[in-house]
Amino acid sequence: MSAVLQPDAAADTTGSGYDLPEPTYRANLTEVGRGTPMGELMRRYWHPVGLANHATDTPREVRMLGEDLVLFRDKRGRPGLVHSRCCHRGTTLYNGRVEDEGIRCCYHGWLFDVQGHCLDQPCEPEGGRAKDKVRQPWYPVQELYGLIFVYMGPPERKPTLPRYECLEVLDEGEFIDVDDTSIGSGGPVISPCNWLQHYENVVDPFHVPILHGTFSGTQFTPTMNMMPQAIFEPTPLGVKVVSHRDLPDGRKFRRVTEVCLPTLRVVPNPRVGKFGRVETIGWTVPIDDTHYRIYTAGRVTEKGVMLPMGKDAAKLKRWDELTPEERRARPNDYEAQVGQGPITLHSEEHLATSDRGIVMLRRLLEREVKAVAEGRDPVGVSFDPDAAPVVFEAGQHIVGA
Image (tube, rainbow, N blue to C red; front, side, top):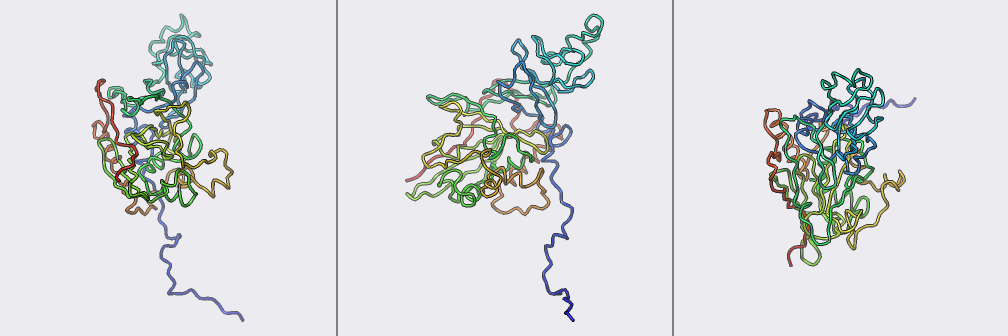
């Protein structure tokens, strides 16, 4: 007769997955729809909604902060961004036709200008005697640095569109180029996870030698593989990370990375193509609660080369050239962040000392969410059209002897 195994009363059952409480996430920091705390904070800033050449006489579908929109440029050259759902009977204006004065709906021909005014209702007597009473929902847009920016917040609180010194002051031979391939995401153009999962990554210097170095092999440069000494500090507009790496010759590699509200990632080229002030700004655009993408503008010397490689930079295949097994074996930021789920479960985190930058960023966002909820303007918002360009400390240098 076989023995009956009895439970070991002394066995350690602490930490069993069975005992986990229902997991939660921080909705106040992650959800971006209208009326949500973060959604209202986001709507107090300008955001890139596409490259300037995306606005043409062919309508373009855009999803931004959970809203479905249509971007176009009328035949007089004016860019427009309107809600996709026609205010007449609800079909999408994506199937509309762009004309001199605006965009015309394919269903009954109502014509709207770039500010949503209804100019023509061809099925109505006299082209629509009451057309002036109808307005297609629209948002103001401006063009800068080769991008189209949109303001989606309360009209009476519309700030000026900020400028940035690193994109205003060009070194010899430089010009501004733009990119919409989501440089910095480590994956495809659109990532299926919450925007904050990527944004927090910018102030996490310690993942670089682990994920991008020893775990997946050199993805940037051997110098970037070195474990940094890092200091986290608040800035007037966000959080900065000052990292030092000790070089074999006794000098230090000093690197400053910043995040700036609302979603700017101010990151020196990790492939270390050159030293000096930061070359690019990327905007981590929340498409909705579970998708984001990045638009980037930067100073370049060669068209299409946003992040030139240093002499010892790794030469790797693009993400879309890798097989699923290669992505699993050599994960990048995309795999690590999407691997947290559509919205990471904050209740299950166990933050450590190396996560100080992430804690600082979350506290900053909480503070500014509260400011907006209390009727105040968030940090970095200016109504002065003559405001000086924003200056960042971000960059990378060799220091010491």
